[in-house]
Length: 253
Length: 321
Ligand SMILES: Nc1ncnc2c1ncn2[C@@H]1O[C@H](COP(=O)(O)OP(=O)(O)OP(=O)(O)O)[C@@H](O)[C@H]1O
Ligand SMILES: [Mg+2]
Image 1 (cartoon, chains in turn cyan, red):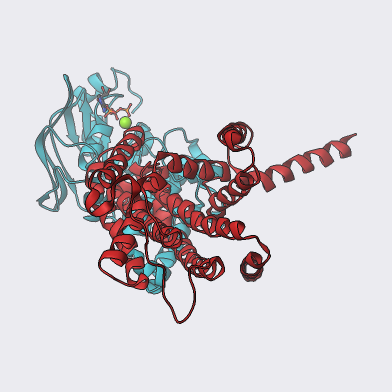
Image 2 (cartoon, rainbow over the protein chains, first blue to last red):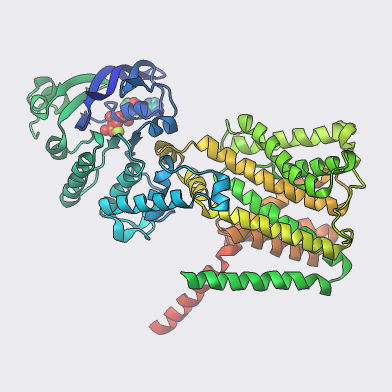
């Protein structure tokens, strides 16, 4: 069953059409790749799904219900989180605090219980699950460090930890491998698989073709805002349109 | 960990005891000064709560006035006792703040600053304009003072104790809020609003929450002030006073809880010392502000760290030579 369904999505910025009538489906439990050259509209697609932009036309269904036009925080509460293309963290906070902020959805509190301390149990649970996620992402022994002091690979892992601790059903990852060396990439690929195994569906935007081909069950290819191709990595790799348009005739896939 | 807690608790107790003894060794008008100083501490700390989300408002002084007017009117015209009108002052300021959230938080940053100023002036002008019930420019006078047993709250020392106890409780509550997950989320909203939104934080709600809560506490501060002076006028809460709040917070430093307190205390004491040079006071204030922005951009709170840095650099050089 499709957990996410994008239907005829169009997004205009003034005169520029960043996305033009794009449709695709993401199956539950999959790692779904969204690829395409620079400026193809991948990040724009994510921002539409996560509610940061409102689609000009078309619809977005999550678990069969339309989420079009909802605010980012609403959408995140229903189970979709995104990570950002530029590594986005609370740099001024410690690693642990970063993840603690991420528990916001699952363990709500109000100002009165916060003052009196009535929410102690909830807070305890929040800290426990934050710690669990940090261990899961291999950041357990860095929890007291400031986020800004982490090396790139760990920063990316932390960005995913913040998303993961809110217990999403669907995670939109925007170029988690960018700028990584091969070893960091391998580590990140393992983490991505681990996240999927924990029951989270993943949509992955990535330029690193090795990582994409190695991880993804299905691919959707965008080019200049339009849908170019879709299917398994095998099918996409052999699709002449993709080879021509996207790879510019080269064959390093 | 617990060592630090104990040390802080001891330091805090000593401070409170010193504060409790202090007024007995002061002259009359210095006792007044001390009362206003403690009230102003509550003003700056509540203002810091508002700024935690990154939005600097220019309406905080007026919110203090909303509390002051509310308590004055309720106690004088409805005959409510101070013990009821005082909490209602906070509630009134919170309600007014909640109503203002709808227009104000559609704006951010510079527009928010100007918008908050305009909204504040609108409120202040209505105090001047509607003689009934607000009393115009001369405001409301003969505000009853609190009554409890036989204590004479017209005297500075009993009133000082009242203010000290209430402000200490308020500071404790504000501290709890900041250290709770709500406080953490407020910081998060400030530093990376989009990231906070992506994990389900409704930034609009949190900005409003900080604004309403801050207004509640400054409303209380307003009531504390005017029940001592006995009169409330629109002039007390004009942009001039707002600028003082800003200077206290900027000079003291807004990153930590105690920075703002430090700013209010140090600058008020300096101000009191320069009382004789009346016309020069704004100039002195201005010089201090410019100096601190240039040389202490992180505020007085960063001074210990900076000094430590200077000394360790010096000793480092000595080792090298
Ligand atoms: N807020 C915006 N206003 C105007 N144009 C925009 C906006 N956001 C994106 N665009 C344009 O939309 C197009 C798609 O941009 P997008 O960032 O989605 O590309 P992308 O596929 O993520 O590229 P990359 O691989 O470089 O990250 C680009 O031409 C971009 O300039
Ligand atoms: Mg992009």
